[in-house]
Image (tube, rainbow, N blue to C red):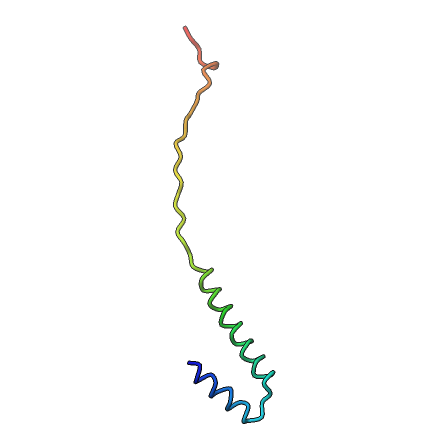
Amino acid sequence: MDNKIELFINQLINEGNAVQDISALFNKKINRLNKKNSLKKTTKKTKKKKICRPVFIISDSSCDEFN
C-alpha cells in the first residue's frame, strides 16, 4: 500500500502540483472518511430492555367502616 501511495504522490508532483496542496487534499479526504465511519457507528440502534419492578399497593384503611 505504501508503494501505491508513493507512486500516486510522485505522479501528482510530476504533474506540477505542490506538496502542500497534495497534503491538504489527502487530509480532507481522510477526515471525511473518518466522519462517515464514526456516524455509521453511532447511529446503530440498540434495543432497550424493559425494566419491570414490582409494585406494592398500600391501602389506607382509615376510610373502611368497621361494624
